[in-house]
Image 1 (cartoon, protein in one colour):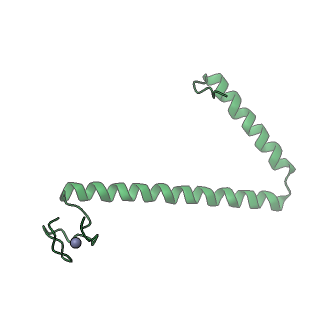
Image 2 (cartoon, protein in one colour):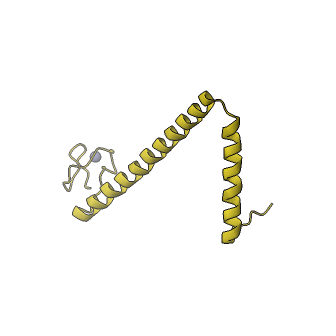
Length: 96
Ligand SMILES: [Zn+2]
């Protein structure tokens, strides 16, 4: 089945409204304990997503700041040791 990707604004709003109603219906059938558990899980998923996004941003920031200061590899291509910024690997002596 081909999923239609170019929704109109009205179609999108209808889909969002439908999802909201379905969610409210599911929530209304839950006991307070089940609701609390569902909210806890959702909160945990959000925190995990945020941590993942933050890690990607940190990695990107580190990558670009390294690139800006010195355009040298971070690790030795020969032995994999971390670079100390010199022209040769401090561990195996191969040029970086
Ligand atoms: Zn090396």
